[in-house]
Length: 308
Ligand SMILES: NC(=O)c1ccc[n+]([C@@H]2O[C@H](COP(=O)([O-])OP(=O)(O)OC[C@H]3O[C@@H](n4cnc5c(N)ncnc54)[C@H](O)[C@@H]3O)[C@@H](O)[C@H]2O)c1
Image (cartoon, rainbow, N blue to C red; front, side, top):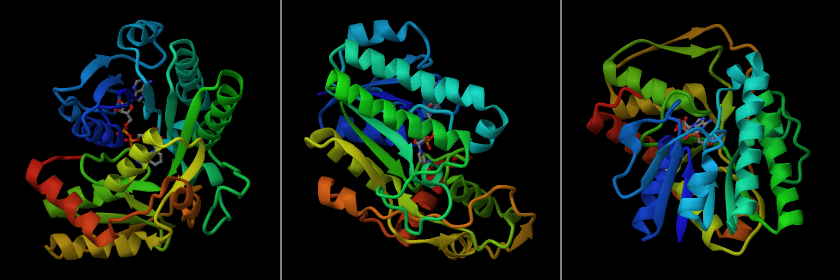
């Protein structure tokens, strides 16, 4: 199969590309390198330094004729989306819509969309399941949800199959500080450098941290199985920022203490996903427990000297 990965120079996208190549498929990357990095590109993948909104993307589809599009490119900073919702919508809604249109016109079989559990559901569902009514409280969440609706329209109108994966907070090798689980990269980098760490607020806010290897496995299954729909991809385990810091401290050592700063305005207090539907339809279960995933993440940053 030939798989076109938008955002393939980024954290999750590059892990997907690596696995796609290892599985013997062809990979094509489209990325504007706004947050992605050249070091994340694999020699065996053809790549285009291009914005998903660029009209020349039509030529890429014409030349490459992908079977599957894995759509990971996005403006993913929630605060940017609050400050500049039009920019967020331009990339995350209109950019995605242009991409769907190209998929429909160029005979793509299936689209895999990187959606978000944390930002789509909003507050109040513990754990959140796909039956809950999404009530996003940020333009970023609203944009991701609206693309899910467009996916359904394109499936109904054009027969373009899709899977939307609502990721929890993804962490692991190659992650940067921008993503929803950026706190893991930030803490790891600071602890390895022996620098002081500040935790926002009391640190009792919780998230569902899912390892990138498990997320890649969900993508593999979404690509290969004859399944259409929207699925939560999370562990069902809530971890507070304080506990995350302690566990990283235990792995890295060095005795760095955290201080507590002011709470971030508008930050969600709790977030955790119920991934029962992914287990039933994709046979997906997370296999990497937080401690082991954090060790692998720390090993990566240590071995590459990566400054995240
Ligand atoms: N990291 C998480 O915890 C998390 C959680 C939920 C959802 N997601 C989603 O997963 C996807 C990947 O996130 P990530 O954490 O790997 O982030 P990332 O910043 O590492 O990757 C995003 C990639 O998209 C590229 N990109 C951005 N705008 C583009 C544009 N207009 N045209 C072409 N390329 C563009 C960037 O250069 C980058 O390589 C995003 O869609 C994000 O919303 C991530």
